[in-house]
Image 1 (spheres, rainbow, N blue to C red):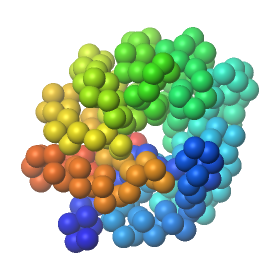
Image 2: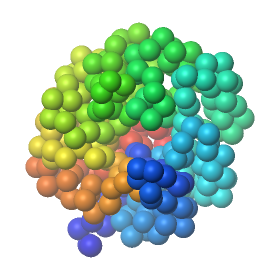
Image 3: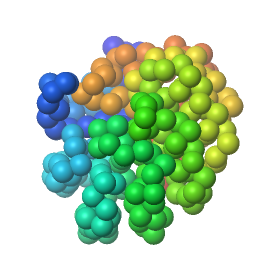
Length: 248
């Protein structure tokens, strides 16, 4: 446990809330705070369990503003209503960015439906976190096309391709091509690709995350620890890069 605690961390992607079928898992704020204390996590970039549950994250943020960095989950299919909700949380509630889950919500990452959301993020100078790694909705090439259309919006490719080696390689390729793409590594099984991304995409563009409640911190931490990076690089992945990206 000492090894898991040693590095100060920012978790760049986790959820609170109840996920029903097919996951059947729940994760509340008490469990999150305990997890953060156990594994030396200073702050968590937090999402709800679905786009209609942003108030759960808002309540967590208001109760623990020193621990929670809130993201607003938006469903691009909702059009103007999605933009209005995003405006509210960015402008009125102080949320730090945008979360999109094309796989769950059923739109492609490069769809024109996404453009108004990206423009709203640009307007408020906020980053966009987007799930990456599942066809036909959230493939790296689609996110690359989105980044090309919106070069002024920082985009985090959550899971950097997830569990498929081809998608992981493509996420690195897209991030090398587009400077506004960043990589978050939760749930990505290939530790060697963390080192590869760090050395070829950029030392400031790879971020640690857990994706609770789906993954355990010890697994995600061990993958970074064992990827082959030097100590100063590990500190960047675990903490410094997310801190700089979020302007902390």
